[in-house]
Amino acid sequence: MMGCDWAKMYWCCGKLQWCRAHWKRDIQSLLDHSDHQVKPLGYDLLKPVKDLFCQWARCRDGTISRPRLKQILSPIRDWVNALLLRGHETAVSGMCRELYNHRDWLWTFLETDGVEPTNNAAKRSLRHAVIWRKLSFGTQSEKGSRFVETLLSVIETCRE
Image 1: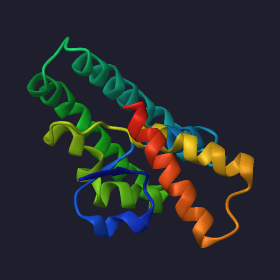
Image 2: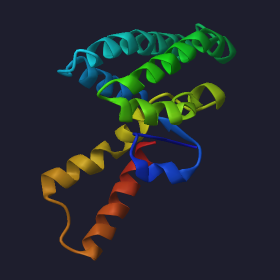
Image 3: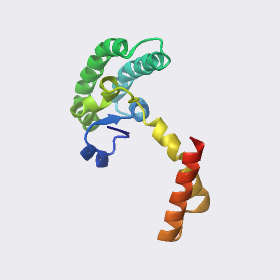
């Protein structure tokens, strides 16, 4: 199981959890869209996404159990699926169709213990390497790349 953004290169990897933080950004793009049919869809999707994150926070802090989370999110899941179907009739039909066709990947975190609805942990673990690459302009050789790869692995291991 892998948490990821919605890039198609991951689709061959089997069971996925599409990142909900990416979904929130896509909903914002719907809200900013110039098409008058798209904006209401963005507003309608914003509510269940906010509810989802609120309930996830309650589960993560132990206020509710995972079975209770599944129970609470069941109608929200149905609502989101209905909204994605409605989106097939708008200017963003491609996005809605992809989300609907792969809707199970939006909800993997409900079915699999230990899976979070975002890929934030993975992004945080890569942050140091990304910052280093931007500040140093990368490496100039294969040998340099292997050195940096090893050094950053050691640093991350020591951090734990």
